[in-house]
Length: 423
Image 1 (cartoon, rainbow, N blue to C red):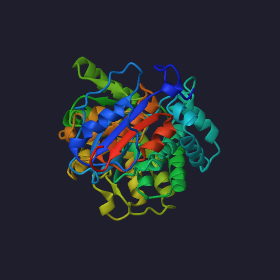
Image 2 (image 1 turned 180 degrees about the vertical axis):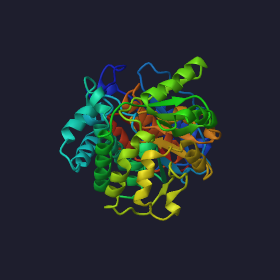
Image 3 (image 1 turned 135 degrees about the vertical axis):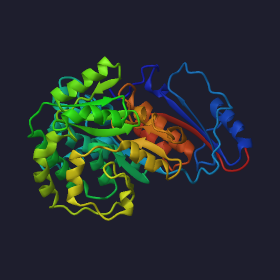
């Protein structure tokens, strides 16, 4: 069912987005009053001083007139980075509402999947849309990597339809593939060929690997891993006190038992193979050889590598060896975010099915100076999370077609934009 507006009597009285903007702060309060009372509803170019309210339920209390934010220069918003999560971020039903209710997303997703080098588009769509009896298949590397690549690109193109484009990208582990594609390092078709072969080679490896996050610093994690270095590795550094480990089940379980004994928090990540660990070594030569058939271009926007922790738009094009090392070496999320933070205050928008980045980003020094938004959240309706992110971007001054977003999501929009004095 497309309209998940259970708090409303009917769709016509469903969620409403109110937008008001004026050239001067003195006229904003009057415009808001008129807008909320229904006296004015006029579209037009958005102005510098902006106010918004999202009426999600009929019994929601009307907002305070004082609830407005002034931006010194709404026409020059801060840089926008798209964030692409990797394997483990997927879940059953993640595309259910978007695929069923937003024709542009549905058509885009099908178009992308039809370019797969193997015929399995309908099966992958089922794994993204259905909620029951798909969890095990969806977690299979053979399926997960192509479906995540297609899903994240389709979501990116949906935001582009609404006028939102990134100044830069960051990808976590497998998320570097959609990130690199959006940065024009390779085409969508080449990307599908790369991720399909990568998934095939990984899936052919023996299963039995494990992946987990630990609430310790890198030094302590490496000390624990040292006796098991032939079977386990540090797979990622998310925050100063959040490390990912990967390797054979027995070795990982030994580390997790140590965490439990010392009351250190940890979390298992559901994956089919132990990425970024010694268990990946048998596929590396074959994958690098496959990558040599491709030409990789210099990124056309900022691409902060989570392998090298550098902005690759300022470097020469990556070599096939990059994608070999990217399979095996740690994901440097902490360092990459710190590099992005140095550019200036930045807005980060996640292009995945959930909130992968928000939880650990809060542990990084300087986090609060930046804006963190998600496109989706498995605990909340898709239309609500998408519109909240869109409204936030509009308030920050990004050029965004709010009327088109409201139409695509099936919401009502009421707006009043006054370029000069209020009448």
